[in-house]
Image 1 (cartoon, rainbow, N blue to C red):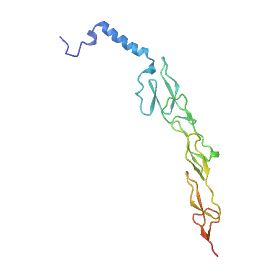
Image 2 (tube, helix red, strand yellow; image 1 turned 90 degrees about the vertical axis):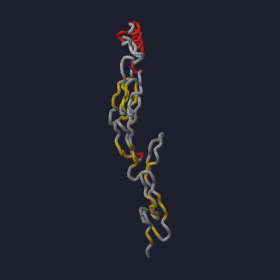
Image 3 (spheres, rainbow, N blue to C red; image 1 turned 180 degrees about the vertical axis):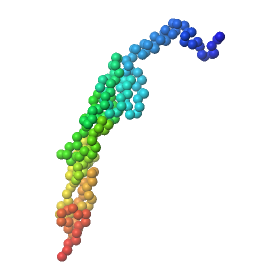
Image 4 (spheres, one colour; image 1 turned 30 degrees about the vertical axis):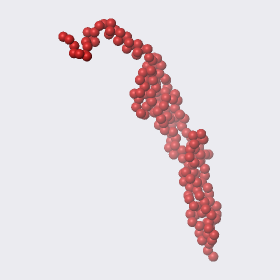
Length: 183
């Protein structure tokens, strides 16, 4: 019986040398490459490739892939370290410290999934964070007697003071509207 066109013979009925060559080629490809040189694009979005392994975020690489072993990923040890994004770091990142001397309070504690979130202490405002210096908060301006509070300070803006108009006063600078003089 002749095989259908394009189908060829089954592998067990082919020439033994052709099968041996195919098997040798496959073994050469597999064994000639370290385990970490195989496909790296099978990781999910929240994972990162390290050789043939996929490490999830919140983990770091304890042992990189070698010719004899696969990659070993271990979780970041809370509460002092984190990795908020998938990466191939060999260490977790240290958690930020919200320094009260810089006008900061901790809004959310560090976890293995995210860094500490800092914010301004009560009565402070914080300017935009910059990568080089981090975040620093300053105390709100205190309005003086004879001034009114034009705009109260927020977490991100300072208090704005305005002088009281002629014929009005503010005894301690904490009023939104100045009071008229009485005689």
